[in-house]
Image (cartoon, rainbow, N blue to C red; front, side, top):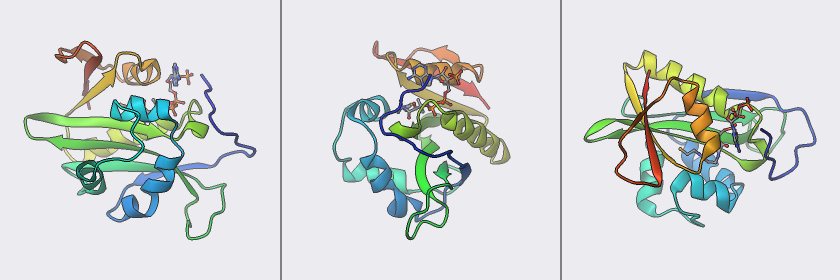
Length: 173
Ligand SMILES: CC(C)(COP(=O)(O)OP(=O)(O)OC[C@H]1O[C@@H](n2cnc3c(N)ncnc32)[C@H](O)[C@@H]1OP(=O)(O)O)[C@@H](O)C(=O)NCCC(=O)NCCS
């Protein structure tokens, strides 16, 4: 399903790679600016205009094992200081103290519904296999049909979430 927020007037060239420390400072704010209130709500469970420092701090840390991420770019967009193109999405797992790491994926609105989320998910699960991650948990708002459709393709199993608004999935990597 295509759900464009902005307009793309070119054929995108989607590339993905593992996130490295420094990507957050380089790319996060500009990508966050391109998320609609609806997308922010679906990702952060609240339509935040700015993320709290504690959340930013957590998102900025990637060590490739406890916290790892895949970033997506549109290499067809030429931007100053952006040799890889325009940052358009990220998928990550974040370590949890009392269970499997937690999954999240975000694609900026103009690029949603074009297969970027699927590319990110495939790349993240492939990375997880190489890093010895066996299971990932995804807490998804019940109303988020797009993300629920996406994880269902990966044989996700529904678990108790303890919150009627949230569906918890377990994905066996
Ligand atoms: C959810 C999200 C990551 C999906 O990424 P995407 O690039 O749009 O997904 P894809 O284009 O790969 O689509 C995968 C499938 O999901 C489904 N899907 C995607 N968006 C959808 C929507 N708005 N409504 C219903 N189904 C949708 C489709 O079935 C699609 O399959 P198709 O190719 O057969 O149409 C993205 O829409 C997003 O960032 N949303 C806002 C933030 C969010 O909800 N993050 C998840 C928090 S855990």
